[in-house]
Length: 385
Ligand SMILES: Cc1ncc(COP(=O)(O)O)c(C=O)c1O
Image 1 (cartoon, protein in one colour):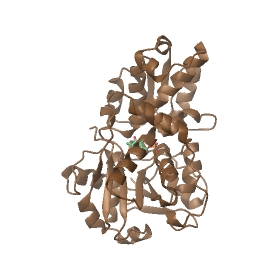
Image 2 (cartoon, helix red, strand yellow; image 1 turned 90 degrees about the vertical axis):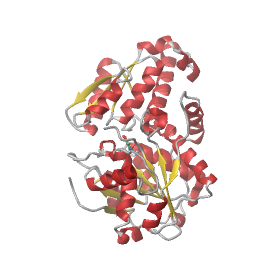
Image 3 (cartoon, helix red, strand yellow; image 1 turned 135 degrees about the horizontal axis):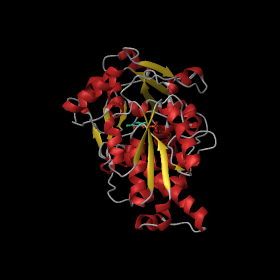
Image 4 (tube, helix red, strand yellow; image 1 turned 60 degrees about the vertical axis):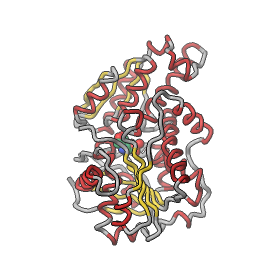
């Protein structure tokens, strides 16, 4: 399963100091489109902001001023932040498709009320589990058919969760990255509408919208931090294809400029495409097998949009051995860090990295942890099984 300790990669030729940034701030996500996305998602039935939870005991152990984790485990009752993006991607893709067919663009409200054209459309995506669930959930709300392609090693509980929204699950013998290509071919063959969260050459509009959806998380986090008068100095953020990190960090860059926190990607030991790319100063893929329980992060090919942004703004990346998410999940589960949260492997990995850093002061120093540092992390998913 890879190494036994964390592997740190720093952005080439640069210390991890956001404050030293003299470049123009150029977030990739269009502000107006993202604001529209937030307004739509906040009107979605069941919407409620997720909590920003202090982990005071972890802060003491790390020797920093505070640690905060944004707990996405309860988002829309679907168990992960992905519910913000996929379902919204379905909405926008349906609007485009129906407009193309009827020359009239339905509003979100018209689609929520049930649009006759929607029932004629089949959506599809490849997924490690959470994105597929969000697409299945959104599709069921709009009355369209949905087919989700899961890589063979995705846990059966993932398939059941997707099927519970009425979608069909197709098992693909291969990795997530290969499943993306297979889904594209099947969509072409069957006339299905792809709602992928990863962007590739020729397919960027829907992934961009999905990232716009993730700005809800960042926006809520900024509001919670302002209420606590906290300025984060570091944000640890899980990366699979990099959509989450691009959506969230882009919004923080736009709102905070050079006051943004350092962005530190966390990824599985072998699926470390962002760490490799940081070290090389250019985009480098990671090859399967990834041998990780962190299924949501088991991607070796970054989204094209993600690398465009993260190649400029990511300060560092940590590749994690399996033991790291395990210590994170266990410590969150017992409440010993200051809050009790049931997190799955990908979800617990950011906090796991912080727990590991309590025992690795040399690495913490390289990341510039100071007594007045205020550190953020995301719990991106609940424990499913
Ligand atoms: C729980 C969880 N965390 C983090 C991620 C990473 O998100 P992204 O692939 O957008 O980088 C995923 C992706 O599936 C996920 O399911």
